Each structure stands twice: as structure tokens, then as C-alpha cells.
Amino acid sequence: MKFSKIAMLCSLMALHAHTAQAADLKAEAQRIAQQYLLIDTHIDVPYRLQEHWEDVTQATAKGEFDYPRAKKGGLNAPFMSVYIPASYEKTGGGELLANQLIDSMEALVGRAPDKFAMAYRSDDLAAQFKQGKISLALGMENGTPINGKLENLRHFYQRGIRYVTLAHSESNHIADSSYDLRRPHKGLSPFGEQVVAEMNKLGMMIDISHVSDAAFYKVLSLTKAPVIASHSSLRAFVPGFERNMDDKMIQALAKNGGVIQINFGSSFVISQANQWGLQLKAAAKAAGKSSDDEVFRAEYLAKHPYPFANVDTVLKHIDHVVKLVGIDHVGIGSDFDGVGDSLPDGLKDVSMYPNLIEGLLKRGYSEADIVKIMSGNLLRVWRQVEAVAAASQ
Image 1 (cartoon, rainbow, N blue to C red):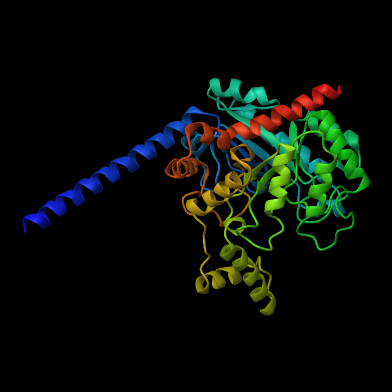
Image 2 (cartoon, helix red, strand yellow):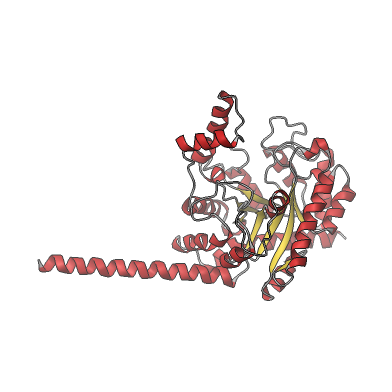
């Protein structure tokens, strides 16, 4: 009897110690999130607001980004995605939409200059962080608005675009897309090669998320500066999904000095979620419906619940990159506001980055290494891209 009481007491003490340790890690994660720069290279706020406007300077009912949640999560340097749907390659109008989306971000800063500031250079982030402001940097998702003219690329640089995702869900006049069975350029078009050279001269980061493998390797053979994958994850965990990167590509990216920014979307992170999407499309086709049909989707979901990823499965992608090529080549590119209702449990919006940091602490990552993942690696690449541009002038 006495032994069982002692055992129970020891068990309670161990439980208390474990609870205290967990509370300490949670507090430590919150401190790190607030103390350092946190860069997320892909948040789809501009297009979200174009479709359904909300005032993100205040708490919003929809979406995954607003000012209060960003402050809570420690997000102080989001790259706002100037997303241009692939259809604009054929219809035209991509230049106009891109300028409108940039206007909307400048208007956001105009409405709340005490909360937001536009960021045009890597040094702007630290300066604006000290002022307590959230830096809004801009990336263009899909090079369609360049429209075959390098002067358009220069125009968008002047407007603040600091990376361009060369293609999106379909091949365009610059590069082949990983999603497109048609690969007209077998990588990059001749004009796409000019775009790579001009981006190096301007100081724009080249984003190889979305492009085909051949386009990726062609970019690496041409660029004089490191490149980024602004929102990609790993094929090691989602075999056959070309939108993600395989190990050889990650090794080539690291040799280039670049960085892969991990996408949080469940279909990018776990194979089950990726397969669920394919199964939905097949079921819709068999029923003579579109997979975008809300009624059909709701009925399908009721019978086949979506298999959400979680914080741990996202962390496995970070671990894999670190084990493969080291701590200097991985960061965060969540795709918040861009992947619908597919975000992992524990990473549902911009208030939840501390959950990711807590997971890194539990895995034994040092504070210095966590800061590299949060912002240091991307900042290094951005500075190198700026240095290459300065040297070419």
C-alpha cells in the first residue's frame, strides 16, 4: 500500500514537471515569435480582398490574416502575393489586375500607417520592426503580367514587387508549370531566359514554386543570384506531386544558396490530403459535377472527412530539409488565404506561428536556428540578390 502511494506521488510529480516544462516551452515560443523578425513569403491577402473586401487593419470575420492576429502570432514581415490567375495569359488584363492589387496594399498602408509600412529593401524590415510596424513586401505569383516586355518587369520592380513566381497553374510565355501536362518550352522560353537575367540585374528574387522540374534546373543554370521556392513543400512526403520539390532539387537549391519556404497546406504536406483532392475530382466527374460545386463538395465531405495535417507533419518537412542540406536553406511560406479550408490543425491562421516555434523547440532546435527558419535564411537570400544587382550596375 505504501509502495503504491509512493508510486502515485512520483507519477503526480512527473506529471507536474511535464506540465510545467510544456508551459515553459509555450512561453518561450511566444517570446521568440515576438522578439525576432518573422517572414512569411506567401500570403494571398491582395486577391482575397479583391474578391471579398474586408478591413484587415481590424479583426475580420473571414480569412487567415488580419492585423490583430498577425500581432498575436508575431508576424511582422509578410510577403503579400500579387496573384494573377493563369486564365489571364489568354484573356489579357493581367497587367491591370497586378497594378490594382499593388494599389490595394498601398491603400492598406495609407489607411493604417501606424500599423503597416511598405517594404522595398531587405533593410526596411528591421527598421520598420523597430517602429512596431508590420512590413508589407510584395511578390508576384505568376509572371503573366510581364506580357513579353522587360519594361513591364522593370515597372513592377518600381512598384515594389520583389519576387516573381515565373508561372502558376498553367504554362505561360515565360516558363512551364508543374501542373500543366503541356510543356511548350521544355523549361523556360527564350524570353523566360531574358527574364531571369533581368531579375538578377534589378534585384528581384526568382521564385521557382509552381514551375516544372525542367524550368527549375534551367533557372539554376542561368541565375547569378540565389533563388527561392516561396511556398513549396517536399515530394518525400507526397510522392508524385510535382508541385513539391524532390531531394535532388533541394540539394541543387542549397548549392545555389537558395531557400525553400515550406507551404502549410495539408495537400502539400501529407499524401492522404493530396489524394483526397484527386478522389473528390474523380467522384465529381463520375457524378457529372464540378469539384468546385459547393453542394456536391459538402455532400462528399460529409461522407469522406478531409484528412487535415497538423503542426508535427509540417515540422517533418522542415526536419527533412535540415537533415538533407542544413539549417540555412529552409523557411516559412504558409500560403495563408490561398489554400482554402486545408490548413493544418494548429496552423489555421497567422496567430498560430508560435505553435510551429514551440514544435521546433521540442525537437531541440536552438534559438539561433529557429531565427534562421523564421527570417534569417530568407533575409540572407534577399541581401545576396540585392548585392548581385548592385554589382551589375
